[in-house]
Every structure is written in C-alpha cells, then in structure tokens.
Image 1 (cartoon, rainbow, N blue to C red):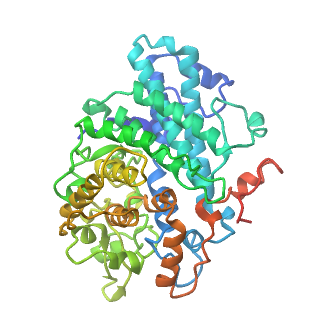
Image 2 (image 1 turned 180 degrees about the horizontal axis):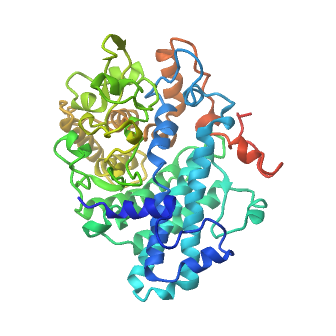
Image 3 (image 1 turned 30 degrees about the vertical axis):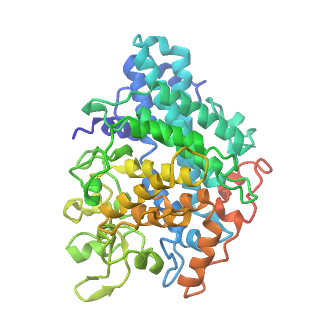
Length: 505
C-alpha cells in the first residue's frame, strides 16, 4: 500500500526538508504569515498537524494500559518512569509522561490553529472550494482529537482556538470541561460534514467522514459518563442516543467489515483493511526515520536478544495476572495479543508476559539505530469498536436497539475469538460487555478510558488491587485519579495561573 502522506508529514514538521519550513512561532511573525502562499503550502500545513500524531500511540499505551488493571507496573528494583502511573502516586506532576502528554497535544493544537487561521485569512489561494473545506475539516478534526486527549488526561485545560503569542498564552487560564467539549463538538460536526468519505491510495491515512463520526460518538459517550465528583471527562449528560445515531451511520455506510479472523486486523501486509476506521500512519526504511516505535513500548528491552536482534528500548511492564488468566485456552486472541516467558542471553529466563499485538518479529528494524522504525500503523478506531460502542449505548438505555442486538454483537466477537457463543438470550450486562472489550482491545490503549466512561473504574480497580497487588505497592484508588495532574513544568511557568488537580501534589 502507498503511504505517501506520512512521508510528507514527518519531513515537514520535524526536519524542514521542504523549501519552506512550517514555523512554530505565533501567526504574527513574518515567517508563518508568508509560508501559506500556494495551494501546496496549505496541504503541507495540514500534513504538519498530522505529524503531531506520531507520538500518540506510545504515549497512549502508557497513559491507558499502564494505568489500568491490564498491567501490573511494579518494578523489581529501582523506580521506573511508568511505575507511578500504575501505582497511583500523588507525585505524578513531575513525571515526564505528563509533560509529554501536555506538550505533544498542544503542539498539535497550535499547528491546527495556524492552519485554520490561515485558511480563513488566505484560503482564497485555493481555488478548489472542496479541497479548501476539506483541509479545514482535517485541521479541525485533528484539533478536536488533541483536545479530547487533553480533557481525558487532565480535565480542565486552557482553551486556545486561534494562534496566540507567548505573552498572551500566559494569561489564559484553564477552561471548564464543558467549554472545551463545545469546541470539540463544533470541530467534529464541521469535520463529519466536510471531510471526504474515502481517499485515493496516495492520501490513505487522512481523516474521513466516518473517522470524525466515530470520534464524535466517543465524545458524546465520554461526556455521558459519571462525574466522579471531579472536573474530569464525564459530565453525566446521557447523550448515548446522539452517539448511537452516529455509530448507526457508520454501520449503514457499508464501508467496513467485521473481519473473519482476528490476526488479519494487525498484519503488517494488511494495513487499511476493512476493519480500520482511522489509523495513524508510519513507514519504515526512510531517511529521515518515519517508522513507529510503539510496537515495543511495552516489550522488555532484552526480548530482542532472544531472537538474535539488537536490544530494544522498551518498558518492562508485565501483563497482570488478572488479564492473563481472563483469557481461556480456546481464545485465539490470547496468543496473538501477548507473549509469555522467554530466554535471553541463552540462559536467562524472563518470566513476564507482555503485549505483542503490533509486534511482528520477522520485521525487526535492520540496525539498533533504527529500533524506532517499525512499518506498522496504529489503529485508533476499528469497526469492532464501533459495533461494541453501539452495544454499550443500548445498555445505557439511551439508544434505539434491543438486548438481542447487544447479545449478537458480543457473540460475533466471541465466535471470531474461537469461543462458544453465549446461550441466547444471553442478556449481556455492561460489566460483561466491558470484560469482552478488555479481551478484544488489550494492548490498544482503550482500557482505562473504557473503565472511566462506563462508571466501573472504582469497583474494578479496587477489586483488582485485592487480587493482583501481592507486593502491596498500589496506592488505594480514589476518584481524583480518573484524571492526571497538571505537569509541574506548566504549574511553574506562571505562579497562580493554574490550580493543581485534586489528589495530586
């Protein structure tokens, strides 16, 4: 498959190899204001916004998987960067992951704001109105994507919908979550109405109408979740019907297929398959490096040596006993999702299990210097997710549909996994649906958000601590931990501008 879009994205945003570099300074500077002078400049500008998706998969795996009951992130010795995320430390404001989450998303928001602003000021340069609207829709989709991440990570965040100077940024306080959602919904509504339904091969990877609908549906569902008495992503708005309408439209488009086998979804030679609603593109073997590093984010660094390869720089975060034993022997997803104990250096046994869903051991990068150069896209939204989110909306009593629809969706997922169907009527409950989602999407950075949105996070995490925390390392879960702390680096930029989230130092 052609993957030209991401070559352009990374080249423009990171290495400036084009004749004009997309400047990161505020729009008032001459360099940015003069960049947008041709049709191609606007295309490169929106490609640069896509470029800020590059770090999302690896960070999302840490933020969601490590935070959840899927992994038991307690190190054998010393302190690892990821440990406090799993263990609910109140001192997480100093974590580099918090700074990365804040900065990477605001970099994307900044570039999207510049693109949108310049389209409004100078968009007449693009004589093709369809292309002009599509580029604006892509920028708005991406801005919504980044802000949705911020709301789920931090709750209240500064709302910036246009280019600002550094001095102006220091006056902008955190906005109410509801106000941030208003912008997200406005952006995604425009995007779903203006994006293309499909793309030619050269543009595969760009956001489509259905990508916008799937994200907007998830926004409505997340807003509908409980508040936990904190200013987090849940507002208790009961908008399940709005989400279901969008999900039904995706299903009715007939653009996607529930693939017959689980392994087909993640094969390196089957990208852009009929399960994929939206993914983040990567391509290996290029100079500069354009491949991904997320396949080994949660893989022990010495696993590669067992295969005679160079050491990889992963994180040794073992899969929890609870998740590992939740798969039955007949479930084909277990072997495809996780790898068990292995021997490295010929004699040393590593007993941990780790995620291998996106790891094709036949495609190791050629040299140690290229270990972040994997040739696989990261799937953000897939058709199975759409179907199971539809089932969730029905169970929340806010959508048209029947219990039979829910039961059928779950049984189809189970059948593909090699499991016997539930006896009908199965009367699948919300906890059962979430348990099935856990097995289906393990290693895809969904688990924590699923628990928070469904209202099950408190009961699930407390019960998991009792079962799996044999070392007594996990701090007791409290509602404040549904979101993360504002990074200390941001708190220190200007005293008094932000107030730290409750529960954190």
